[in-house]
Amino acid sequence: MTAPPLEPVAPRDPGEDPAAIFEALPPSHRAQFRSEYDEALDVAHDPAGFKRVRTLLRQWSLRAIAYARPGYEEAVEDGLRGRTEMFTHYGEWGRTLS
Image (tube, rainbow, N blue to C red; front, top):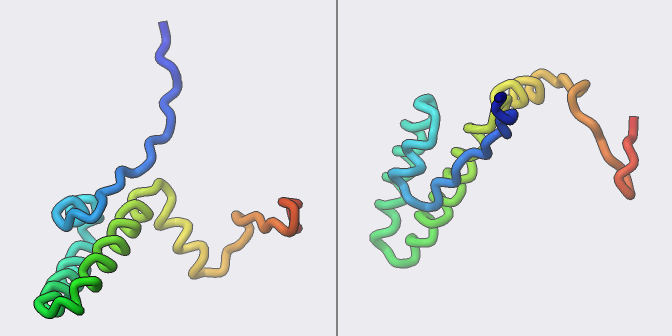
């Protein structure tokens, strides 16, 4: 008996829980998150600044998901170096434009 092939698992959404976001981030991004989070909390002492905390948590939650995707770092590197041969561009109606 053989096992069925494993499906790629989508990164788990940490939601807006700061501890879950911190744990989901690669270690290389945790200090930046912590710094921005602490700064947002300082601003949130004023009720008008509370929205900044929620926005920051949602942005970092999305970043954590992106960072966890297989091939993310390579894709960023390809983009920074202008290597576009791996990308396909679609025009109107989904036709491939080559």
